[in-house]
Length: 384
Image: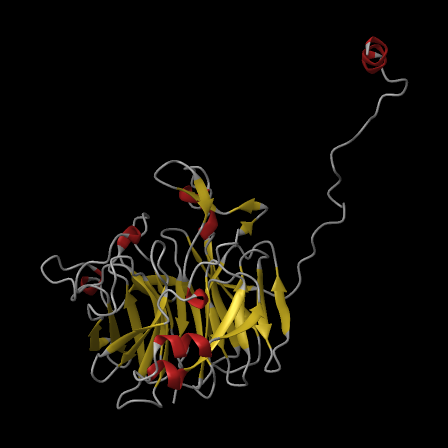
């Protein structure tokens, strides 16, 4: 042992020299052409939608940033409150009135934009009668429909997240909404637009739930949150991204904390006589697609999904094959996707994973956040 120690302590005959890693050392290669549509220097956006006439709307959930208005429209290079400043404030006397914290905005090809209010700022328990959908007529910027989610579909843990519309079913159409709970069961909420009646479907089944084996890794670091005991566990968010097929017959969905894509027939979702057991058995696991926040579908049968672990946007072809359209280190957490009338796919890159809760209390987000787009030469899936 003394001999070994003596040998280890001897100076090297030839010192090992090194230099800083050269800038031209081979590195991860980006591909695909990203364009920046708007840079955000204030609150962090999550959602975007592009109307059939090219108007762009965004939303800012009240998660802790200073959010003067929770829905905005990009006009002449600036974001202005939409439809006005007054509606963007909570009405403490009537939670169903003003906007509390909007998570998603979707233009419906019917001349309206819909605003999805979680009524759960900071992911708190949703305020009673506060979670709602508002439809705004784009011709006059006035609210023309208000749908409050009934108590029968709302749990204390419910966080309504994303939505898709189909005007081929029901007197005024149907809307499908994901419950992306952080601490309870995920689900798909199906609402009849004419009556406001709603059903909570696939609640707590594996397809709408956090994958217990899933550990997200973003920018080389596991994405974890601290519990009440201080122990850190992987981020767990239930059903989140959603897309509706061009014919309206298939709903695609995914938990945020999963890499799998699932689908189910919309006719079964809408049919109250179909039991939860029958419905769960009809869900198809379409395999891995990467971990996604937002999804979208086009008129030709393709499905698009962000891949936040790989700074990428991916496309599922009608035959089920996946291809990566763009990979770029600047694509930091691709969020909501929207196909515009110009053949571009629009999406938010908001650095969600760099928030203080994921980075030991340090806010590591670097402004600006970006609204980006990518040319895909495709039209949005029709809603009627």
